[in-house]
Length: 298
Image (tube, rainbow, N blue to C red; front, side, top):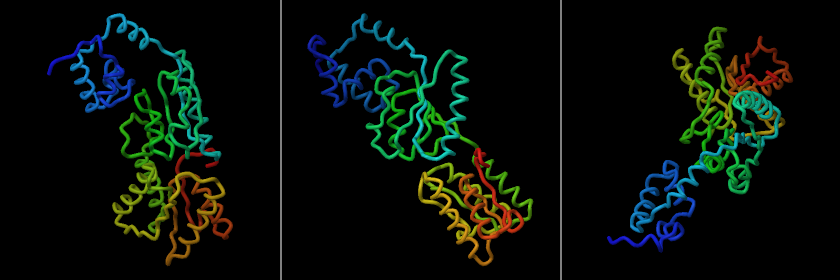
């Protein structure tokens, strides 16, 4: 195929012919690792066909641009209105600031609405590329997390999605739940219930999987009636309390009822504890309840 003169070729015409944005063409030229292989190859073919070349002056300008650093790291947090979520964020902020301060950098904290369209809640720092990278606590909306992290240096703190290819820092949920189940078995419990949140979150899913595996290893059948799962991702405290009370009543109505409940979160453990006391059950004499998460109220 004959090549056309680069004189008449611009990034705009290449973008139009390759059916991508001008920004994508720029990334293919300057930072190809940020572009999907199929798109990168398509754009590269059009560039080659146009015999498009970048001037040395433009290349030096871009290198100087990419050498610049803002010295700022964004910390993106879903706006979940209850104290336990706020407490976790406060503790994370302390650790992040300590590490960044030692490197002469600063943290920029941003709360975003969890139910809104990803683009409508895009922080200004991301739209303007005014941070060197981001740390993100995952929202219930997977699309929001992907949009925030797209083509950026990003680390997810406490990832709750199973199929996201991003660097993550997670707790060892398997080891934690094994410790809880081993402890309850040591106390002599064999009829143990499980109460947890939505299984759309890998955090809850991992803890439920370990609950099942622990019973299996001890030769105890896993009864589905002993498992209570909330369908919601995030709930206000009063809703957690009401759901915990309902779950407890359903478990106590079983014949025989459980002698222990392993809760996947401290929030559910607290709700179960309050409901048990309201029903005159002595804890732990009549019923053992364990939590998970080391919340400030635990």
